Length: 559
Image (cartoon, rainbow, N blue to C red; front, side):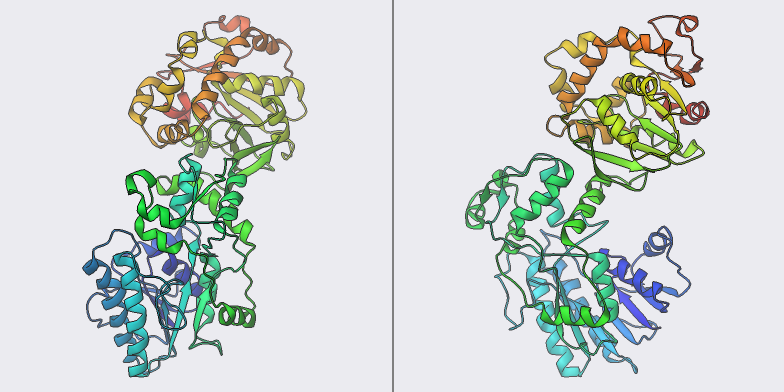
C-alpha cells in the first residue's frame, strides 16, 4: 500500500484517508470496526483504492499490509479518562505502531500526531498535565521520539492545535455550545488567551504532504497564527450566529479555585487556556513548499459554527444542505436548502422551526428553501417586520417558486403573495391559523412562556398530536434558548389579532391558492364555499399534517 492510517475512523483519521484516496493513493485503513466506509461513500469519495483492515493498537500488531508511509492518527481524546485507559492508546498504542513500522522493509516516513500543548520544542511539557488525557499524550510523545531514535525510524511529529470541522463536538465546541444556549456568562481566561485553530481539511492536506516533503523528519506545529485571542474568537462566532457574546473574562486561576458545579468548567480543559505562542515556522515552510494555504480564520469559524448548529452539537443529523446563517433584513437568519432556484419555499408554523418540513421535503420533485423565521428557531430577531424579512429572503430567489406556509406563517405568506404576484408561482396554506379559532386562553396566560421553555419532547409531541421525533426535539432545543419561547407566544398573539384582516386578502390574491387541512383540524372561520379557493382535507391528520402524513401533503403542493 502507499499508506496505512491508524485511527482511520477518528475525526482526523477519516479526513486523512479521504485526502489520500483523492490523490489516487492505495490506502490501508486500520480500524476496530468499519464505520469509515459508509462515511466515505456518503461524501462521494472513491473507495476503489481502500483496504479496510482490523487492528487493535493496544496489542502488538501483526498481519497488516505493508505500506510505504505510516500515519498514526489514533488517540483517545476525552476528558475524565482513567490513567490506564488513556495510556493504553496514547502511550502503548503509539509505541506498538512505531515498533510495527520499524520492521517495514520500505518505510519512507512514520507520521505521528501529537499535540500543540504536549509537544514543546525543548522536550519539556508546556504545562503541568491536569488529567489522564494530557499526561498520556505527553508521555506518548516523549516515548515515541526516544524509541524512533533508538530504532532509526524516520519520524515526523505533527502537533495540531484545536482541529475544527464537521463532526468535532468536544473541546472548543463545548464552549460554543454554551454560547449558543445562553449559558456562557463570561469567557474563561484573559483577553490574551490564545486557543489556536486549524481546519480538519487543511490538516489532512498538510499530513498528506509530509512524507514526500524535503522538510519531513521535523516537528511541525500546525495551527493558524492569525486565530484571534479567545474573546475575539467567541465574538466572531456570536456575531455570525446572532447571539450575545459575553464581555467579561474570568482568570484561569480563579476558575481553578471555584467549584466545578458553579463554573461548569472541566479542570482538564483549563491548561489549554494560555497566552503561549508556538513555533510554526517549519509548518509554514512545509505548507508554502506544497502550495497549501490556510483558509481565512474568520470564514473557518463561521463555517464550523454553521456545522455545529446544523448538527445540534452532535445530537442530530442535518437533513437539508447547504445550510447556515445569512443576513436577511437585519436578522441573522438560519437558511437551509436552495437559495437561488427553489421549486418550493417552505415557511414553518409555531412553535416549530424549518425542521418541521424534513419528513415532507423528500416527497417533493424539486429543490426547497426552508428558513427559520426571524426570532424563531435558530434565527435571531430582526428590527424589521416579518413582511420585510420575507421580501428580502425572496430577493435572492430567481423564478417563481410555490410558497408553502404552515399555520401562523400563512398570514405573512398570503400578504407577500398578494403584494408580489410576480415573485410567486402559487401559494399553499397548510392549516392556516387565520381561518381557525384562535387559542387565546394559552397565549394570554402568564405561564405560557415558562411552560414552553420547560417542554420536553414527549410533552410537546403529545400537545401537538404528533409523533415524538427529531423535528419535535429540534423545536424543544430552540424553545430553551433565551428569548425564543417569548417570541413564539408573541407571534401567536399577533397572529390572532390579525385574523380578519388576513382573511380579507384571500379575495384579492391573484396567484393560484390551495388550502390543505387535516380532517381533525377543521376550518372554523367559514366553510369551504366562502373561502373561494380549493380546500384539500387530509384524512386522519391534525394541525401538523406534514409530520403525520408527509407524502399525502406533498402530493398537493405541486400547483
